Image (tube, rainbow, N blue to C red):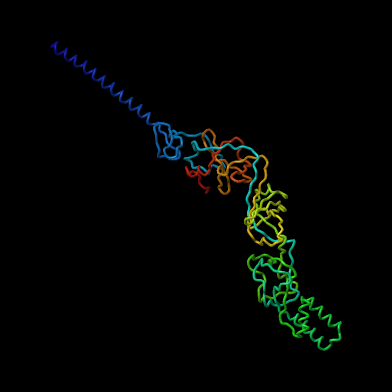
Length: 403
Protein backbone atom coordinates (compact mmCIF):
# COMPACT_ATOMS: atom_id res chain seq x y z
CA UNK A 1 0.00 0.00 0.00
CA UNK A 2 2.82 2.39 0.81
CA UNK A 3 4.47 1.41 -2.39
CA UNK A 4 1.36 2.27 -4.37
CA UNK A 5 0.96 5.60 -2.64
CA UNK A 6 4.57 6.43 -3.28
CA UNK A 7 4.22 5.63 -6.97
CA UNK A 8 1.04 7.63 -7.25
CA UNK A 9 2.73 10.56 -5.63
CA UNK A 10 5.70 10.28 -7.93
CA UNK A 11 3.37 10.10 -10.90
CA UNK A 12 1.61 13.30 -9.77
CA UNK A 13 4.96 15.05 -9.41
CA UNK A 14 6.04 13.92 -12.82
CA UNK A 15 2.67 14.93 -14.25
CA UNK A 16 3.01 18.40 -12.70
CA UNK A 17 6.45 18.79 -14.17
CA UNK A 18 5.15 17.80 -17.58
CA UNK A 19 2.31 20.31 -17.33
CA UNK A 20 4.74 23.07 -16.31
CA UNK A 21 7.05 22.19 -19.19
CA UNK A 22 4.15 22.16 -21.60
CA UNK A 23 2.92 25.54 -20.35
CA UNK A 24 6.41 26.99 -20.68
CA UNK A 25 6.64 25.66 -24.24
CA UNK A 26 3.29 27.19 -25.12
CA UNK A 27 4.34 30.57 -23.70
CA UNK A 28 7.60 30.49 -25.64
CA UNK A 29 5.81 29.65 -28.87
CA UNK A 30 3.26 32.43 -28.27
CA UNK A 31 6.03 34.91 -27.49
CA UNK A 32 7.91 33.92 -30.64
CA UNK A 33 4.82 34.34 -32.76
CA UNK A 34 4.17 37.74 -31.22
CA UNK A 35 7.71 38.90 -31.92
CA UNK A 36 7.55 37.48 -35.42
CA UNK A 37 4.23 39.22 -36.01
CA UNK A 38 5.66 42.45 -34.65
CA UNK A 39 8.61 42.24 -37.03
CA UNK A 40 6.42 41.61 -40.03
CA UNK A 41 4.03 44.47 -39.23
CA UNK A 42 6.79 47.01 -40.03
CA UNK A 43 6.70 46.82 -43.81
CA UNK A 44 8.21 49.34 -46.22
CA UNK A 45 6.81 50.21 -49.63
CA UNK A 46 7.55 52.52 -52.58
CA UNK A 47 5.28 55.62 -52.90
CA UNK A 48 5.50 55.26 -56.69
CA UNK A 49 5.02 51.48 -56.88
CA UNK A 50 2.79 50.15 -54.04
CA UNK A 51 3.38 46.54 -55.12
CA UNK A 52 6.99 46.76 -53.93
CA UNK A 53 7.05 45.65 -50.25
CA UNK A 54 10.07 45.06 -48.00
CA UNK A 55 10.56 44.29 -44.30
CA UNK A 56 13.44 46.77 -44.01
CA UNK A 57 14.34 50.27 -45.36
CA UNK A 58 15.99 50.52 -48.74
CA UNK A 59 15.49 51.66 -52.33
CA UNK A 60 12.81 50.74 -54.83
CA UNK A 61 14.22 48.28 -57.41
CA UNK A 62 12.00 49.88 -60.09
CA UNK A 63 12.52 53.66 -59.76
CA UNK A 64 15.25 53.90 -57.11
CA UNK A 65 13.20 55.99 -54.67
CA UNK A 66 13.54 55.56 -50.89
CA UNK A 67 11.10 53.07 -49.40
CA UNK A 68 8.77 54.51 -46.76
CA UNK A 69 7.09 52.88 -43.79
CA UNK A 70 3.76 51.46 -44.87
CA UNK A 71 0.87 53.33 -43.28
CA UNK A 72 2.95 56.32 -42.25
CA UNK A 73 1.02 59.57 -42.41
CA UNK A 74 2.25 63.10 -43.12
CA UNK A 75 1.14 66.14 -41.24
CA UNK A 76 1.90 68.46 -44.22
CA UNK A 77 -1.17 70.10 -45.69
CA UNK A 78 -1.66 71.42 -49.22
CA UNK A 79 -2.92 74.95 -49.79
CA UNK A 80 -6.70 75.04 -50.06
CA UNK A 81 -6.72 76.57 -53.54
CA UNK A 82 -4.49 73.74 -54.81
CA UNK A 83 -6.14 70.89 -52.91
CA UNK A 84 -7.83 69.64 -56.07
CA UNK A 85 -4.44 68.78 -57.54
CA UNK A 86 -3.84 65.82 -55.26
CA UNK A 87 -5.81 62.64 -54.80
CA UNK A 88 -6.64 61.89 -51.14
CA UNK A 89 -4.46 58.76 -51.10
CA UNK A 90 -1.42 60.72 -52.20
CA UNK A 91 -1.53 64.04 -50.36
CA UNK A 92 2.27 64.15 -50.27
CA UNK A 93 5.22 62.43 -51.91
CA UNK A 94 8.35 61.42 -50.02
CA UNK A 95 11.33 60.74 -52.30
CA UNK A 96 14.86 61.72 -53.29
CA UNK A 97 13.90 63.50 -56.52
CA UNK A 98 16.47 65.95 -57.89
CA UNK A 99 15.85 69.47 -56.64
CA UNK A 100 17.17 72.97 -57.37
CA UNK A 101 17.23 76.12 -55.28
CA UNK A 102 15.45 79.24 -56.52
CA UNK A 103 17.89 82.16 -56.58
CA UNK A 104 17.72 85.84 -57.49
CA UNK A 105 20.13 86.89 -60.20
CA UNK A 106 20.39 89.03 -63.34
CA UNK A 107 19.90 87.01 -66.51
CA UNK A 108 20.70 87.93 -70.09
CA UNK A 109 17.33 88.16 -71.82
CA UNK A 110 17.44 86.12 -75.02
CA UNK A 111 14.52 85.76 -77.36
CA UNK A 112 14.20 84.43 -80.89
CA UNK A 113 11.34 85.88 -82.90
CA UNK A 114 9.99 85.33 -86.39
CA UNK A 115 8.64 87.95 -88.74
CA UNK A 116 8.45 89.04 -92.33
CA UNK A 117 9.49 91.80 -94.70
CA UNK A 118 6.71 94.30 -95.28
CA UNK A 119 6.36 97.62 -97.03
CA UNK A 120 6.72 101.04 -95.47
CA UNK A 121 3.19 102.42 -95.18
CA UNK A 122 4.60 105.96 -95.23
CA UNK A 123 6.03 105.37 -98.70
CA UNK A 124 2.91 104.13 -100.50
CA UNK A 125 1.15 105.70 -103.50
CA UNK A 126 -2.55 105.31 -104.25
CA UNK A 127 -3.77 104.62 -107.79
CA UNK A 128 -7.37 105.77 -108.14
CA UNK A 129 -9.81 105.77 -111.01
CA UNK A 130 -10.62 109.23 -112.38
CA UNK A 131 -13.67 107.95 -114.23
CA UNK A 132 -16.51 105.50 -113.72
CA UNK A 133 -16.54 102.40 -115.86
CA UNK A 134 -15.94 98.67 -116.27
CA UNK A 135 -12.54 97.01 -116.02
CA UNK A 136 -11.98 95.38 -119.41
CA UNK A 137 -8.46 94.01 -118.93
CA UNK A 138 -6.29 93.66 -115.85
CA UNK A 139 -2.53 93.37 -116.28
CA UNK A 140 -1.80 92.95 -112.57
CA UNK A 141 -2.55 89.39 -111.47
CA UNK A 142 -1.58 89.01 -107.80
CA UNK A 143 -0.90 90.88 -104.62
CA UNK A 144 2.66 92.15 -104.03
CA UNK A 145 3.37 91.97 -107.77
CA UNK A 146 6.23 94.34 -108.66
CA UNK A 147 5.46 97.05 -111.22
CA UNK A 148 7.46 99.84 -112.88
CA UNK A 149 6.67 103.47 -113.50
CA UNK A 150 4.65 103.95 -116.73
CA UNK A 151 3.54 100.29 -116.82
CA UNK A 152 -0.04 99.69 -117.99
CA UNK A 153 -1.99 98.16 -115.13
CA UNK A 154 -5.53 97.96 -116.59
CA UNK A 155 -7.88 99.00 -119.40
CA UNK A 156 -11.26 100.53 -118.57
CA UNK A 157 -14.41 101.16 -120.61
CA UNK A 158 -16.11 104.44 -119.74
CA UNK A 159 -19.00 106.15 -121.59
CA UNK A 160 -17.81 109.48 -120.20
CA UNK A 161 -14.33 108.98 -121.63
CA UNK A 162 -15.74 107.81 -124.96
CA UNK A 163 -17.90 110.95 -125.19
CA UNK A 164 -14.92 113.20 -124.40
CA UNK A 165 -12.93 111.61 -127.26
CA UNK A 166 -15.73 112.13 -129.72
CA UNK A 167 -16.07 115.79 -128.69
CA UNK A 168 -12.39 116.42 -129.42
CA UNK A 169 -12.55 114.64 -132.79
CA UNK A 170 -15.67 116.62 -133.75
CA UNK A 171 -13.98 119.95 -132.93
CA UNK A 172 -10.87 118.97 -134.91
CA UNK A 173 -13.00 118.11 -137.89
CA UNK A 174 -15.67 120.85 -137.92
CA UNK A 175 -14.04 123.75 -136.04
CA UNK A 176 -10.32 123.17 -136.15
CA UNK A 177 -9.63 126.92 -136.05
CA UNK A 178 -11.24 127.25 -132.61
CA UNK A 179 -8.11 126.53 -130.56
CA UNK A 180 -9.74 127.56 -127.30
CA UNK A 181 -12.43 124.86 -127.52
CA UNK A 182 -9.95 122.28 -128.78
CA UNK A 183 -7.56 122.99 -125.89
CA UNK A 184 -10.48 122.72 -123.48
CA UNK A 185 -11.44 119.29 -124.91
CA UNK A 186 -7.83 118.09 -124.58
CA UNK A 187 -7.64 119.29 -120.99
CA UNK A 188 -10.85 117.45 -120.16
CA UNK A 189 -9.33 114.20 -121.46
CA UNK A 190 -6.20 114.80 -119.37
CA UNK A 191 -8.34 115.29 -116.29
CA UNK A 192 -10.03 111.98 -117.05
CA UNK A 193 -6.63 110.26 -117.03
CA UNK A 194 -5.50 110.41 -120.64
CA UNK A 195 -1.77 110.86 -121.26
CA UNK A 196 -0.20 113.08 -123.93
CA UNK A 197 0.75 109.95 -125.87
CA UNK A 198 -2.87 108.81 -125.90
CA UNK A 199 -4.02 112.25 -127.05
CA UNK A 200 -1.51 112.32 -129.92
CA UNK A 201 -2.60 108.83 -131.00
CA UNK A 202 -6.26 109.92 -130.91
CA UNK A 203 -5.56 113.02 -133.02
CA UNK A 204 -3.34 111.11 -135.49
CA UNK A 205 -5.70 108.16 -136.13
CA UNK A 206 -8.94 110.13 -135.79
CA UNK A 207 -10.58 107.12 -134.10
CA UNK A 208 -11.83 106.92 -130.55
CA UNK A 209 -10.96 103.96 -128.36
CA UNK A 210 -13.66 102.00 -126.53
CA UNK A 211 -11.28 101.11 -123.70
CA UNK A 212 -8.71 103.35 -122.17
CA UNK A 213 -5.47 102.25 -120.52
CA UNK A 214 -4.47 103.36 -117.00
CA UNK A 215 -0.75 103.53 -116.22
CA UNK A 216 1.19 103.47 -112.98
CA UNK A 217 2.77 106.72 -111.90
CA UNK A 218 5.33 105.05 -109.63
CA UNK A 219 7.24 101.81 -109.14
CA UNK A 220 7.02 99.33 -106.31
CA UNK A 221 4.75 96.50 -105.19
CA UNK A 222 1.02 96.24 -105.71
CA UNK A 223 -0.80 95.86 -102.39
CA UNK A 224 -4.49 95.57 -101.60
CA UNK A 225 -5.96 98.80 -100.38
CA UNK A 226 -7.75 97.26 -97.39
CA UNK A 227 -5.69 94.05 -97.13
CA UNK A 228 -8.80 91.92 -96.56
CA UNK A 229 -7.41 89.15 -98.72
CA UNK A 230 -3.65 88.77 -98.81
CA UNK A 231 -3.56 86.48 -101.87
CA UNK A 232 -6.19 87.84 -104.26
CA UNK A 233 -6.64 91.36 -105.59
CA UNK A 234 -9.64 93.49 -104.69
CA UNK A 235 -10.15 94.51 -108.36
CA UNK A 236 -10.91 91.92 -111.03
CA UNK A 237 -11.84 91.96 -114.72
CA UNK A 238 -15.50 92.76 -115.30
CA UNK A 239 -15.88 94.82 -112.14
CA UNK A 240 -17.31 98.35 -112.22
CA UNK A 241 -15.38 101.11 -110.56
CA UNK A 242 -16.47 104.64 -109.72
CA UNK A 243 -14.67 107.93 -110.03
CA UNK A 244 -12.12 108.51 -107.23
CA UNK A 245 -12.29 104.83 -106.15
CA UNK A 246 -8.95 103.43 -105.01
CA UNK A 247 -7.90 100.61 -107.33
CA UNK A 248 -4.44 99.77 -106.01
CA UNK A 249 -1.82 100.92 -103.61
CA UNK A 250 1.80 100.82 -104.72
CA UNK A 251 4.40 100.40 -101.99
CA UNK A 252 7.89 101.74 -102.59
CA UNK A 253 10.31 98.81 -102.49
CA UNK A 254 13.38 100.89 -101.67
CA UNK A 255 12.43 101.43 -98.02
CA UNK A 256 11.01 98.39 -96.25
CA UNK A 257 10.31 97.13 -92.73
CA UNK A 258 11.24 93.95 -90.97
CA UNK A 259 8.37 93.35 -88.54
CA UNK A 260 8.35 90.87 -85.67
CA UNK A 261 5.65 89.81 -83.20
CA UNK A 262 6.92 89.61 -79.60
CA UNK A 263 4.83 88.23 -76.75
CA UNK A 264 3.74 90.96 -74.36
CA UNK A 265 5.37 89.19 -71.40
CA UNK A 266 8.72 89.71 -73.16
CA UNK A 267 7.96 93.19 -74.51
CA UNK A 268 9.08 94.95 -71.32
CA UNK A 269 12.66 94.01 -72.19
CA UNK A 270 12.51 95.46 -75.72
CA UNK A 271 13.14 99.18 -76.17
CA UNK A 272 13.74 101.49 -79.11
CA UNK A 273 17.41 101.50 -80.20
CA UNK A 274 18.04 98.06 -78.66
CA UNK A 275 20.42 95.94 -80.76
CA UNK A 276 18.79 93.19 -82.82
CA UNK A 277 20.39 90.64 -85.14
CA UNK A 278 18.26 89.82 -88.19
CA UNK A 279 18.69 86.69 -90.31
CA UNK A 280 17.48 86.95 -93.93
CA UNK A 281 18.39 83.77 -95.75
CA UNK A 282 22.14 83.37 -95.28
CA UNK A 283 22.68 87.04 -94.44
CA UNK A 284 23.10 88.41 -90.90
CA UNK A 285 22.28 92.06 -90.24
CA UNK A 286 23.14 93.92 -87.03
CA UNK A 287 20.43 96.56 -86.70
CA UNK A 288 18.56 98.51 -84.02
CA UNK A 289 14.89 98.47 -83.05
CA UNK A 290 13.12 101.48 -84.59
CA UNK A 291 9.58 101.01 -83.36
CA UNK A 292 7.73 99.15 -80.56
CA UNK A 293 3.92 99.07 -80.59
CA UNK A 294 1.54 96.82 -78.57
CA UNK A 295 -1.42 95.48 -80.52
CA UNK A 296 -4.17 92.87 -80.24
CA UNK A 297 -4.62 90.43 -83.09
CA UNK A 298 -6.54 87.18 -83.57
CA UNK A 299 -7.22 86.84 -79.86
CA UNK A 300 -3.53 87.00 -78.93
CA UNK A 301 -1.70 89.84 -77.25
CA UNK A 302 1.51 90.79 -79.05
CA UNK A 303 3.92 93.68 -79.34
CA UNK A 304 5.03 94.75 -82.80
CA UNK A 305 8.78 95.31 -83.14
CA UNK A 306 9.85 97.04 -86.34
CA UNK A 307 13.24 97.61 -87.96
CA UNK A 308 13.77 99.93 -90.94
CA UNK A 309 15.83 98.47 -93.78
CA UNK A 310 17.15 99.83 -97.08
CA UNK A 311 16.42 97.79 -100.20
CA UNK A 312 18.12 99.76 -102.93
CA UNK A 313 19.03 96.72 -105.03
CA UNK A 314 15.70 95.00 -104.52
CA UNK A 315 17.26 91.87 -102.97
CA UNK A 316 14.61 91.67 -100.26
CA UNK A 317 11.06 90.70 -101.20
CA UNK A 318 7.80 91.78 -99.62
CA UNK A 319 6.37 89.00 -97.37
CA UNK A 320 9.75 87.26 -97.22
CA UNK A 321 10.10 85.36 -93.93
CA UNK A 322 12.89 86.48 -91.58
CA UNK A 323 14.02 85.72 -88.03
CA UNK A 324 15.82 87.74 -85.37
CA UNK A 325 17.40 87.39 -81.95
CA UNK A 326 17.22 89.86 -79.08
CA UNK A 327 19.91 89.78 -76.39
CA UNK A 328 20.20 92.18 -73.45
CA UNK A 329 20.81 92.10 -69.69
CA UNK A 330 17.84 92.06 -67.33
CA UNK A 331 17.43 93.33 -63.80
CA UNK A 332 17.91 90.99 -60.85
CA UNK A 333 14.93 88.69 -60.47
CA UNK A 334 13.95 85.16 -59.37
CA UNK A 335 14.59 82.58 -62.09
CA UNK A 336 13.95 78.82 -62.30
CA UNK A 337 14.41 76.26 -65.11
CA UNK A 338 11.48 75.80 -67.47
CA UNK A 339 11.33 72.12 -66.48
CA UNK A 340 10.62 73.05 -62.85
CA UNK A 341 7.25 74.67 -63.61
CA UNK A 342 4.12 72.81 -64.70
CA UNK A 343 1.55 74.60 -66.85
CA UNK A 344 -2.01 73.44 -66.06
CA UNK A 345 -3.58 75.92 -68.48
CA UNK A 346 -5.17 78.29 -65.98
CA UNK A 347 -2.43 77.89 -63.39
CA UNK A 348 1.29 77.25 -63.20
CA UNK A 349 2.73 75.32 -60.28
CA UNK A 350 6.03 74.12 -58.87
CA UNK A 351 6.65 71.37 -56.31
CA UNK A 352 8.33 72.81 -53.22
CA UNK A 353 10.26 70.39 -50.99
CA UNK A 354 9.79 70.81 -47.23
CA UNK A 355 11.23 68.16 -44.88
CA UNK A 356 11.44 65.55 -47.66
CA UNK A 357 7.85 66.26 -48.72
CA UNK A 358 6.86 67.84 -52.04
CA UNK A 359 3.91 70.21 -52.13
CA UNK A 360 2.33 71.88 -55.21
CA UNK A 361 2.50 75.68 -55.02
CA UNK A 362 0.95 78.08 -57.54
CA UNK A 363 3.30 80.66 -59.06
CA UNK A 364 3.02 83.69 -61.35
CA UNK A 365 5.59 83.79 -64.15
CA UNK A 366 7.05 86.59 -66.22
CA UNK A 367 9.68 86.66 -68.95
CA UNK A 368 11.19 83.57 -70.52
CA UNK A 369 14.85 83.49 -71.57
CA UNK A 370 16.06 80.30 -73.26
CA UNK A 371 15.44 77.51 -70.72
CA UNK A 372 14.82 79.87 -67.78
CA UNK A 373 11.58 81.51 -66.67
CA UNK A 374 11.08 84.43 -64.29
CA UNK A 375 8.95 83.87 -61.16
CA UNK A 376 7.04 86.94 -60.01
CA UNK A 377 5.35 85.46 -56.93
CA UNK A 378 4.57 82.15 -55.25
CA UNK A 379 8.03 81.11 -54.02
CA UNK A 380 10.98 82.83 -52.39
CA UNK A 381 14.71 82.77 -52.98
CA UNK A 382 16.20 79.73 -51.26
CA UNK A 383 13.15 77.47 -51.68
CA UNK A 384 14.01 73.94 -52.78
CA UNK A 385 11.84 72.81 -55.68
CA UNK A 386 11.66 69.77 -57.93
CA UNK A 387 13.87 70.17 -60.99
CA UNK A 388 11.44 68.21 -63.21
CA UNK A 389 7.80 68.99 -62.42
CA UNK A 390 6.57 66.78 -65.26
CA UNK A 391 8.26 63.77 -63.66
CA UNK A 392 6.10 64.28 -60.58
CA UNK A 393 3.08 63.57 -62.76
CA UNK A 394 4.49 60.83 -64.98
CA UNK A 395 5.90 58.82 -62.08
CA UNK A 396 2.84 58.94 -59.83
CA UNK A 397 -0.01 60.28 -61.96
CA UNK A 398 -1.53 61.87 -58.89
CA UNK A 399 -2.59 65.16 -60.46
CA UNK A 400 -6.17 65.25 -61.65
CA UNK A 401 -8.21 67.88 -63.46
CA UNK A 402 -10.69 70.05 -61.62
CA UNK A 403 -14.29 69.06 -62.30
